[in-house]
Each structure stands twice: as structure tokens, then as C-alpha cells.
Amino acid sequence: MIYIPFAFPGLPQVGCVFTTGSLTPGAPADPAASLAFTGAADPARVIANRQDLKEHLKFSVWHSLRQVHGVDMIFEPEFDTLTRPSIEAGDGMAESRPGRALAIKTADCQPVLLAHESGQFIAALHVGWRGNVADFIGRALRTICVRYGLAPEEFLAVRGPSLGPGAAQFIRFEEEFGEAFRPYFDYRTQRLDLWRLTRDQLTKAGLRQDRIYSLDLCTHDLPEFFSYRRDKSTGRQASLIWIKES
Picture 1: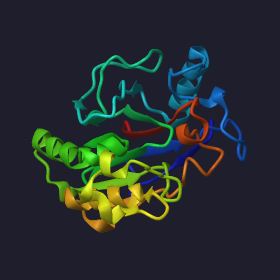
Picture 2: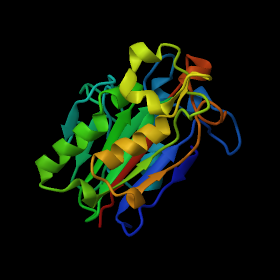
Picture 3: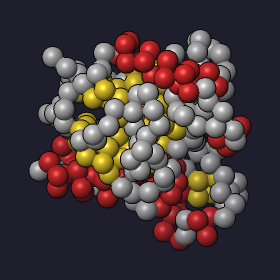
């Protein structure tokens, strides 16, 4: 399993990785590397892949959701879903207990991982374009801050590999997005810059610009990632964040 580690500056107690769809370096995405029980994925292989990550990264519990392109948050998720499909529906999770990895599954959508400056609170968001339209990022941060008594400027964020500006074509922009999102849309190419939109939504939600990071890797253009837009029937990579156990 190939993954890209990310380290939040000053937060060594927070672990963070973004997987690819490859089993070996430099190889294209392979269905056998999928981390989600979707489509034709072999459940036994999905479990083995998740277990491999757990052993290498040293977390204790795998939490993931049945992602539905909505705006619901799950706090302190209850179920370990490493060996079975997720039953809780939602697109964001927040956690304060060490050892529990929050996993977002994607194949073009944006995974946004958040860490509080104390290292004691984390969150993981699945942000598809519908999530951008609904300002899921702003909604999620508000509920996280209310739940834990925090302030948005105290958070750091990283956006993982996802559909890049050169590949995010929307031929029904007016219907799906609307006038408020015109600054992000190029009518000539029918492409929309989702990366810039997400950064702006994080800033609008209260994060400092110098605390917003990104992995500008386009899942559509880079063959080592799963991409629904490119392949339609495909597996899922995962983005994980956890508080390390002592």
C-alpha cells in the first residue's frame, strides 16, 4: 500500500496520511488497492489493505462513514468499521480520543483534514462539489467549535489529492453552482477551480491562511490515483488523520 505522509507543523502527536490507488511505487491505480467496499472490490482485500495501514501507522481503530454528499457530522464515532461497510451516514467526523483514525474515502472529491493547535482535537471532511455548494466546510467548523468550545482560527487544515482545476469540468454550472460561484468558473473551458474554492471557504470559516495546506495532486490526471471522472467504475483511496497514542 502506497501512501503520502503529511505532518502539521508543530503537531507531532497528530498523524496524517493520504493513500494512492497503487500497490507499488509508480504503478497505475489497481482495484486491489481499494480501501472501500464499493463496486467490484474484493471485501477480503479491502480488509487486508486497511489492516496493513493500521499495522504500519500504529493506530487502534478505523472509523469511516457511509458518505452521502451531505453536511452531517458524526462526533466521537462509535463503530470500528475496519472489517465491514460503514453503517452511519455522514460526510464528516470529529474526534478527541487518541488512537482512532478518521478515514475519508475518495475518487476525485476533496478530503479535508483538520487539527486543533493543541493536538487534542481532529476532524475529517468529505468535500465533493455538492459539499462546496452547501458550504459544508463552514458548517462543519461551526459545529466542531461549538461542540468542543474552540475557535476556528485555532485549527490547521490540509486538503488532499482530488480533482484539479484542469479536470473539473461542469457543463451545467448555472444549475449546479449558480452565480455566487462565478469567480471560480472559466466559461471558456467550463472548468471550475475547486481547490481555490475550498481554500477560500476555509479562510471564510475563520482559518488563518498560513495554516491552510494542500497536496496539489489531481486524481484525474495522475494514474496512480483512483478517479471516478476518468474511469467511472473504480476503487477508493483514503485520507486518514488520528491522534497518536502515547
